[in-house]
Image (cartoon, rainbow, N blue to C red):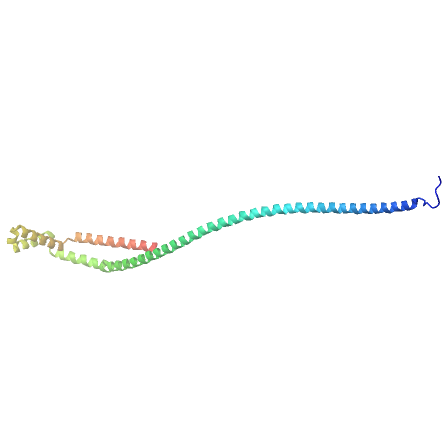
Amino acid sequence: MKMSNSETEFDYQSVLETCELQGQSVKKALDEKNQSDSSYKNELVNLKTLKREWKEKNETMFEISLMLKRNLQKLENTMNRQSIVNKEITSVQLKTTSLNSDLKKQSDDSMRKTAEMDQNLQKLHTHFDERTLEAEITNVTTDLLSSQDIEIHLQNEFQKLLNTHQFEFKNTYARCMILKMLKKKLGENLGVTVLKKKIAEKRKNIQFLTNQIEKMSVKL
């Protein structure tokens, strides 16, 4: 059966052109899709990179936060210890001030006592000057030697007392009083040896006092 002229013949060329156009469109769309997929992959990689960096930064910040907390705790402990130390320092300063005051007072007292001792020593040296002592010894020796004999002199004094108080001496009470007077009289007529001994003791005491004052002056 033959086709009529009125029927249109199949246009392969148009179909091919259309297919070609469609293929180009599909290819273009595919290229765009591939490009979009590539861009998406790049964005995904970037996102993963950012996520990793953020995680690392987050971990770093966490470590920094822990370190800051530890440092703050250390600082707080240090401040507490410093507060305790400051209190101790204040206490020590108060004690030092009090001690310095006591030491100054003791020093002033020592200086005052030393000055008094110096004055007393000067008085002792003035009163018990060597020449004065020698003069006293000479006077006593002269007085005692002028009586020729100490025992005879004392016996004479005792006899005088007996003659003067012969009646009262019989009485026990009166005898005691006379004996006291005799002892007093004897005490006024001590021998040269006893007097020298007393003078030597006084000199020894003066020398000891002088040494003590010198030691005290060195310490001060």
